[in-house]
Length: 130
Image (cartoon, rainbow, N blue to C red):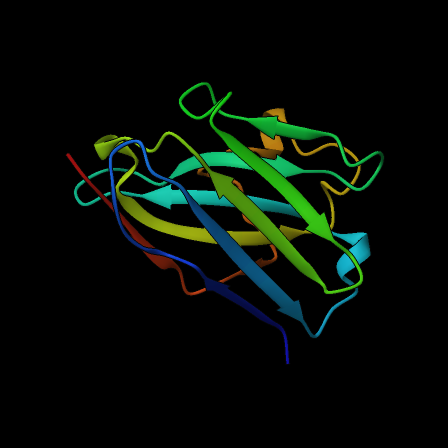
């Protein structure tokens, strides 16, 4: 059974940090590009970051660039999202996703709220207070 299980969300003050984890099982983790998305109440799902398998090259949306860092631990089948300098507008449910087709290049068409990713997690809530 394929599972993506996010954890690490919570309530934090503006300027604080959180580290999200996404533990994968049931598929060959090393073969899949990994993504982080978020969705705030009343808003569309938004791509946050992705990491490809070709060279581990990370990609970030403009809204989080310089503040968030994606990383992958293949030995633990886990992808992380280190979030620093958090802002109230970062408040959302954060989801991880996995996709095989975009394994070597996770940007462009593959980094889209309309693209159909292979697997999704259930999400973890991040709330940033002002």
